Length: 492
Image 1 (tube, rainbow, N blue to C red):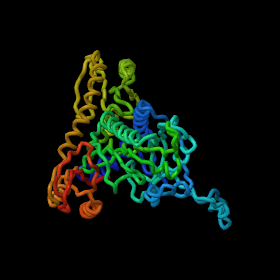
Image 2: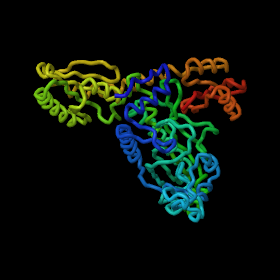
Image 3: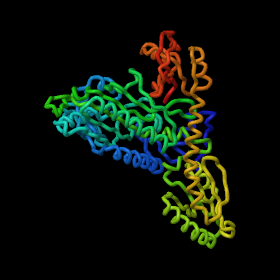
Image 4: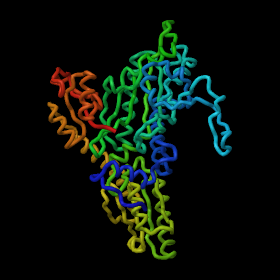
């Protein structure tokens, strides 16, 4: 096993980095800013994918796949989008290498293999997708077009952190086309709600649904909906976004349809996405100084059975009981692993599965066989109990549900206790420095004030909550009139 984790209270960032590596989730790669997602980490991502994919399809969406490369002329067609991502783009300029004439063991770029037009490695796919949609959409009968793709994207980040910010990451991106503005807005809100439902029911992460300010919107969007979560260190994390794109991309790529009145009109658009950043949210919301804590709904395996024995005869007897238990649990939809490796002692295994966040651990030893009991250990509370063999399956099913709810409630209580209402800038700065979390404060609605607060405090407006009440007041910084409170926080 790896060395003991740094405590969260000592260095939260170091704790996070150590945990991701020691829990076998991911590691840095030979490519600067890129990561290798290891099998255990990828198994969690696969579970996320499966649930989200199911939810997308239940709301009428289909999967497709579009090219990794975007011709520069297409990328720059929608000016705001191009400008917003220009500084993060990786660009392909040549299509061939050749042997270095001065050193035959080396390769150089062939200067004669320069592309006529540079290719952008997609930072997002609106450009290539909307150029494609032009050929797919002619009539109102072709709408709505509800497409999602699972893909990788590249954004050339200078400062990276595993899962939270990497030069290449995995995500899904939905791109939809609609006949009316109302339909597109409804779609953008629907998908934001899908993300919120997934975050709360599977990640066990409570989120606040809201809209971004103009300066925080997706480049090329008329409105950006979002879900914002709060991590244990008091920083916010944007967990998902859904964008109402208006007709911006339809006009940039001339995507029109003939309405049922026979008129030519530009379609209305949305795009929406979540990424492997959700892995960071999962880790930082629930985990502790002992390691990862996983909600049962996303754990690669929900239960691990560890045999405790001194000789082969004891292992054989325990294995018979354990294998029967494995079958019973699987019949009830529980994912379970029987770890009968003889290369590691039970204590080592206990530490491994605690570090990896397995929700329930079952220990079975010779005395348990005599008493017809097993030892059940919960990862969320680190408590243990002995359970009669006949009631193990029912107890496991009950506990898994209880653990899922407990993790959500604990995270929600932390979040709610870290939403602070302030009415002046001194309290704003003090709360940010001493308590952290979300700060609910009046804002005058100007980008100038938003930028000034960010410059002074490093806090940004995370969102204007969708359930925010119209409440006249005075801006916390400028003293000008304000119509509602917004949520500020320092963020990842």
